[in-house]
Image 1: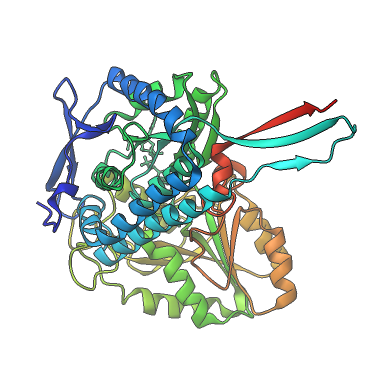
Image 2: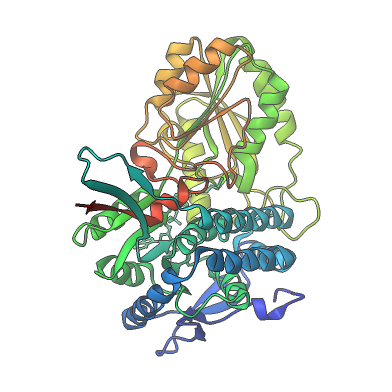
Length: 484
Ligand SMILES: NC(=O)C1=CN([C@@H]2O[C@H](COP(=O)(O)OP(=O)(O)OC[C@H]3O[C@@H](n4cnc5c(N)ncnc54)[C@H](OP(=O)(O)O)[C@@H]3O)[C@@H](O)[C@H]2O)C=CC1
Ligand SMILES: O=C(O)CCCC(=O)O
């Protein structure tokens, strides 16, 4: 049982039409702690009919919410932000219990999640239209921005709070209403945030949270004519399915999908800074982040020195349950996740890679995996093509800038890329040549609420956060008025 200062945050119902509800069937889904397999709590398994009810409630809520003055919506969002920050310790405890990440990291995510609400509370007041100089003197051309309408969000388990607020905050700020389906593994953080939304004064139906079977809920939300937009974060495979399901009703989609981030270290880099950046990018959330470095390319001249220093520092990362003091690497989310990491490492070793550190399950058992560094990695290995989503750093050797750019871009993904160089001309050349939506130069950490987060190619469509994020929830209406 999670110990909380505010026990009202641990909910066992879904949030539909402003009330906490159980499934009419009485069916539930158990949420378990990946650190020890214990049950953290049940959540309802809602039926298709109950999801339809949520859509009806959203329809009723949309008119009044969208017609409120932007500053009123902003004030409610600001209160929601303040409540999340005030309850950060409890929210982090719930997150660690269901997701596994270390408590300090969970609290960091809560603060990060809250930052999107604060940012979009401010942006709500800055949704400007346009006046276009008309080609005829008797016309006035105006651009109005209006909310898209009812939106759906389907979110993953790796960031149980931030992936919801990064979608819900701009939607609500724009005057939309939203139905959220959190990941099966991490619904409790979502529900706790929902409780604080109620306390902040969000009217019934403006934000709803439905739990249960993904295909049922996703099927209803994508098929509905009333739902005008889907925002999804998760695997490219599921993103593709959902995009197809949205096609018959021509819904707007924002998709934040898989990555295969290259992390390039040139001979002229500051090696110590690159080691720090690689650890931050690769081992954050035990490597379970779509922007995690997945392929580390190191230039020949510094390859051995970088590999040695990286392994020395990675060896210092304490592994354990997220509730233990000082732990930096928690368990992986589930058995499938650890099986995937094992498959990637075994494939690399079978094709000639060398394990410098780790390379196996951690003695703690369960889904704990040792932080791993592998050298001698080549493009024919699975780690070169697929997102590992675990604490494994595969090091590829390269000779020239042209060669590494070609290798970095040789993937269907295009989310985040990183490179380390002290050379100013190379900085611009490489930043412009990388086919990615986000590029980190001399840093392994690029995410914040004021920056546009999103990918190109099969990593997705649209941008979240920043001044661009609210546009995803706004329609442009062109008004042409004849004045004579
Ligand atoms: N871009 C990113 O941030 C993420 C990338 N991934 C990548 O995906 C891999 C698999 O992770 P996984 O959790 O399975 O990711 P998924 O894409 O399967 O899950 C993400 C969300 O989509 C839901 N979902 C799954 N299938 C459907 C469906 N048919 N219709 C509607 N909703 C659906 C899930 O629900 P439910 O949980 O109930 O199944 C969850 O809420 C990871 O190893 C990683 O490589 C994973 C998570 C995040
Ligand atoms: O993995 C994700 O989908 C989100 C990345 C977290 C972030 O950096 O915002």
